[in-house]
Length: 179
Image 1 (tube, helix red, strand yellow):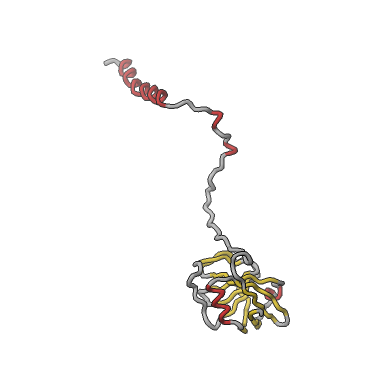
Image 2: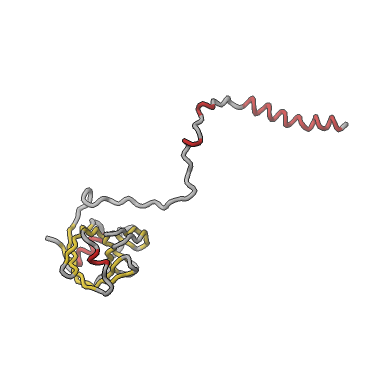
């Protein structure tokens, strides 16, 4: 067989494939294709979704408490969850708080709070009253701390947080139910 004949025979399968694909395909209406600038592209990063919080005052029963620091009183609203209810059962409390990491003040509770029925992790933001289970401490956050395993949301502190965030030495706090 000649070289020319070999070349012709070699191109036959490719030609048949192209003809077959053309015959099987449907005509594409390019007017139905949106411009690339309008197509939403998936993010290359997968964010960790922040759990939605049930807003205080709408669908949960709230309990008001007061936090007495020296001669100043901060008010807080406890959430209706197992951890907050366990704290409420221990009130009134007088505890010694100390600054931790320039972001929060903490105090060891006389009785640890069980985490049954609580998420494994939560986010602590400025003004949150939380419990950190690994250390058995109640926490008043005066900065955003972020999401950590072992954090349980107890409630929200209202008022001037400079009462707690300007402390270089341990200080005594009394927490009690209002009313």
